[in-house]
Image 1 (cartoon, rainbow, N blue to C red):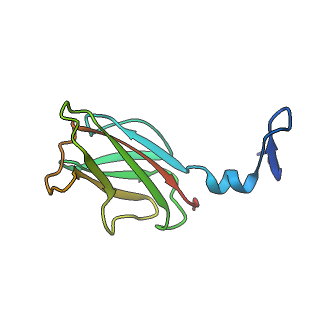
Image 2 (image 1 turned 180 degrees about the horizontal axis):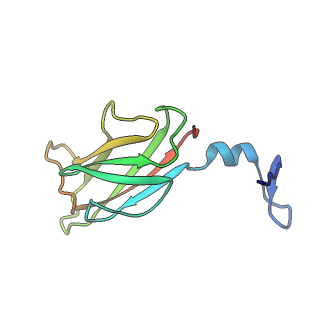
Length: 131
């Protein structure tokens, strides 16, 4: 039999710092990921089942436990592993966001040339309601 702990507020041992449970449930990342510099594998993650390589600089993230809808927030960031220290963009590919996955594209700023998967480490966090 599963146990249930019902509380309205969490507090530290000294009762100086507390947070309402609604903030914990609604304000915490529901998934996060770190795609390795090789662009093909996930170095570390939470609630992510897999990553797919859709081509040079493009990929897809698959969420283990789906979000409640496609209306969730994705924060993406990247680290240029190349010695050029070029500035790049990373964004969710238009119209690909679904409850269980999304695609992203990585490119140089002001350019249509996608980066190779071995140039950039990608990071992301997903916020919203789980299904």
